[in-house]
Length: 148
Picture 1 (cartoon, rainbow, N blue to C red):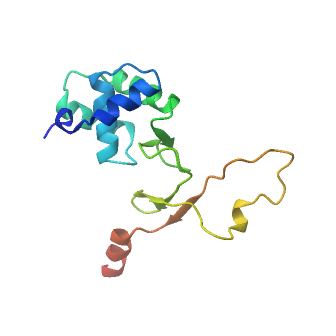
Picture 2: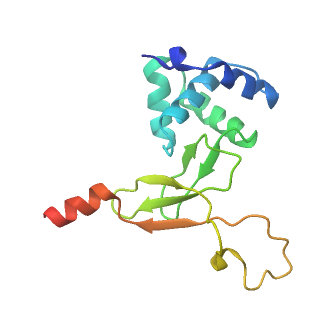
């Protein structure tokens, strides 16, 4: 099933709400990120081109930049990893990254007392957000290690 069939009217509404024209490449990128969160640019290109083979690499790069600038897409880049994109925006969620395979999953914001999210010395900054990346080993890599 191509991405055109899985595009929702919500995507068109989202694009119009941030004053972006509704285009097939933009709709395809939004659909790809909805179905495949935390993917890199090359994966987004492959997913979009599976349905729209004539879309250029540059068009996808431009769409990702426009969607990120408009706040419809979030770009994340854990230390030592390539940039990844996701369509989950508007909340203060965090990520857990596998040190072995690089898999990424969402982690909801800390609940209750979270002293590590309060700067011990804010140096006069007005802090409005903390970005947290948890590092570890995903279940698949942990299982692989124990079976070896």
